[in-house]
Amino acid sequence: MPNDSDDPSRTGSSSCRADPGQEGMGRRELLKAGMGTMAALATLAGVTAPLLSLRDGPSLDEFLQRHYTQLTPEMMEKILARIEHEIAFRYGVKTSVRDYKPIPDVEFAYALNLNRCNGSRRCVYACMKENNIPLDHPEQAYIRVVELDNDSLDLEEGNVLYNHDQVPQEGKYYIPIQCQQCRKPPCTKVCPVQATWTEPDGVTVIDYNWCIGCRYCMAACPYEARRFNWSRPKFEPEQINPDMGYLSNRIRPRGVVEKCHFCLHRTRQGKNPACAEACPTGARVFGNIRDPKGKINFILKNKRVYILKADAKTIPRFYYFFDR
Image 1 (cartoon, rainbow, N blue to C red):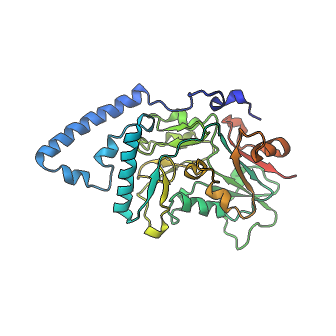
Image 2: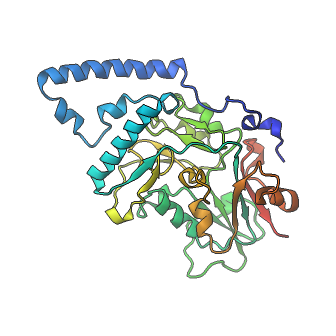
């Protein structure tokens, strides 16, 4: 079991929060200077409006936007309004996009009962709907459910493409895998522009406007939990969840990495993640690990608890357990 000394967020340390370094900022500032010159020349030529109306890439405002950790409330208010306007323009849907902040003295954790998971994948579908992932792009799903033989412990032997008429299958058990929200995440360390970091409530997030799509974080993640957005998502208006968070389920631009964020637009309002709410067997337990009387701590003290790939030493906040 991890102890408090392994977790910077328990001691009030800010070391896990990104502070855009001089190297990353220098690159961005250089690009900004170049774009500023280009915009000035375009204005003189009378073509600024067509440039800003292009919808296949970021607008000038998006490109020049500061890192999330440097945004003032006034800046964020304008950004949220811009995002709502862009979604309305592209998809014809009125949305509410908010910047949900961590709840003080809360550190989220997840526990999953492997005796109860029946492999129905309802958690997957609920996650995709909640987080505005097109249902015709299952490869983008944040959750993978692996089917294993009862006598197997090797995830490499598992089947993620099973398609049975009925689940669970006799002689099989199921392991859903998603972002483990690690206390020592390797993904955040390799990002060259510090576009991903861990928040005080334990959720590792991505600044989609700062991500350059290099995919180093994907290579570093031992759990294959991150997804690259190869194209602009396509939705019918009724498919879009209009309640969005800036760091969570807002519609992501093409060319960035995304992943599970514990539905922070829900959980930072005291709700459960969509996957936990959709689980038909009650296998998923979500809560605050800093609450000594909470369900998560009861499970950690009284059940047979495991973490995935312990040898990676990432110290996940996602636990698996058995009733017996």
